Amino acid sequence: MGKFIYEGSVKSEIEDRALTHLQLVITAKLRRAEPFPFSWREDTSVGGGRTTVWMQPGSSLVFKYFGSRQPSINRAWIEALAFTANSPGGLYLVPEPLEGAAPPNGSGEVGTAPPA
Image (tube, rainbow, N blue to C red):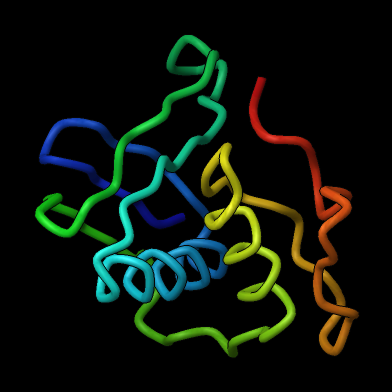
């Protein structure tokens, strides 16, 4: 279980495989100077609810992994995450699609709904 740390104080545990895919999408957007919101549901062990942070090129981000090996990359998952990151609601974790799955369409029916 990896950790995503934002601005040194906001922390969330995310499985290493998912964190790797999120890192690829986040860094691609920030390299292009495209700010966006990133939301996730909090575990009930830390009070539940959800957190949204504003991601921008100057943000201090740490991606801390438990494992030492980088997982294989699922291009379909990268595309699904990028689709959410480019939407008005911003980036949120969607379930991993099967490798080679059709890319998201504009219908908004990709993965799960953004955190409520």
